[in-house]
Amino acid sequence: MQIPFAQSQRSTVGIEWELALVDQDSGDLRQVAQTVLDAVLPPGAERHPHIRQELLLNTVEVVSGVCRTVGEAGADLERAIEEIRTVTDPLRVELMCAGTHPFARWDNQKVTDQERYATLIERTQWWGRQMLIYGVHVHVGIEDRDKVLPISAAMLSYYGHLQALSASSPFWGGKNTGYASNRALMFQQLPTAGLPFHFQSWNELEGYVDDLTRTGVIDVYDEIRWDLRPAPKFGTLEVRVCDGIPTMSELMSVSALIHCLVEHFSDELDAGRTLPDLQPWFAQENKWRSARYGMDAILIFDEQANEGLVTDDLHRLLGVLEPISERLGCATELAGITDMMRDGASYQRQTAVAQRNDGRLDTVVQSLVEEMRRGRPLLHHT
Image 1 (cartoon, rainbow, N blue to C red):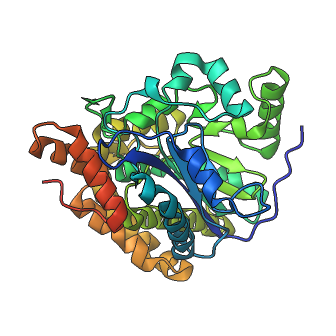
Image 2 (tube, rainbow, N blue to C red; image 1 turned 120 degrees about the vertical axis):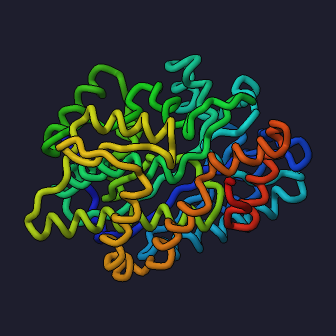
């Protein structure tokens, strides 16, 4: 099986942001996605260019166009959200984003009436129905197919950094899970989800997809749901590591970090240097550590098993990436990573809100809704 990789301009960027629809009064999820999608559909169009359907009727996804900077992508998302609010505000429905909803019940959610979603649920059963989760996907254009797999492997060295910064799912079904990102470990229960396999060549990837298609594991390439995957139809590397991110400011900062990392590794390949290539067992351990401990995680940084606190390495990394951020027009957004480390990740803020309000998780939803409205975190986690 041949998988053509689309022509794409180097380091273009696109962002996909999954948003929950919640009741303004109770904070519980509302199943009104189809109402929203019908209302915003341009006349004569099959679908909205920036507002998309998702698995569950409590979710809409906003997507940017192909942009030169993360700021441009953010502007696309802002316009889409404004359009959604013209429909949701009169319905007393708010928008919210986190890796999971703090207290909603998975078994109360309705699946979007589409064959591909029905097929997914039929195959995956209990685990598929549990996918009450929200994420962020960042696409970065790669101009040469031969770069995609080495850059993807190198990005695994920073998986834990991205997971820790974006971790926003400490609660599940009304319980404190003790994890910074419960979403990360739930999502990998789906077949073909989780960490990518380590392929040395595009031919190996094509062989894998051929095997899965012939044995009925997948029908189309998009059913490979890795945390990092090549997106051949767009000519991008798609970074799917992150939990749902609650605010525009944090979304821009994490997207800038991803954008700069991919460009950095592309530069390294151009210079003939070898990219980092973490052993799969270290990458797997880092995923668990960052999901469990978030910003307090001690990660394995390299093939020699050197370890350290994720925040210490982020400070080092920002210094490396600063010149690249100037070139990509995202220096301000990248600098926001420092603010995120100072103010705490979303899971820390959510947990602090619950503690201050006798464990009431409706107050956590209220804080997430207000953060989405304001576009920035509300308070420090301590």
